[in-house]
Length: 98
Image 1: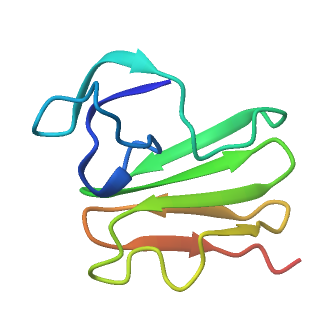
Image 2 (image 1 turned 45 degrees about the vertical axis):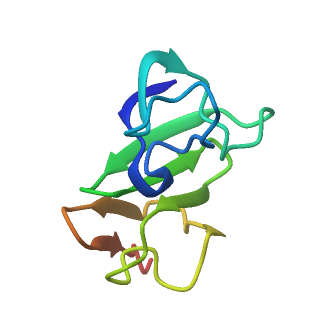
């Protein structure tokens, strides 16, 4: 679930007519960018983008890519033991090369 300002889809929510003019979700809403059959185990959020990691190590990125925060991918698989974190305008991937 997520709520708040969904600018550029950073909350993983699709905009709807129920949003107010600023794209704000005041009620916790089911994240729609993730498949329903996969549990989310980690979330990291930047200023206008977010990263979701599933229990199967799949990664979903959503939100603004104006400054390359999402790279050229919208989803990929994460190597076991690796981590991914968002900061304001960028994303870090820490690769466990073992």
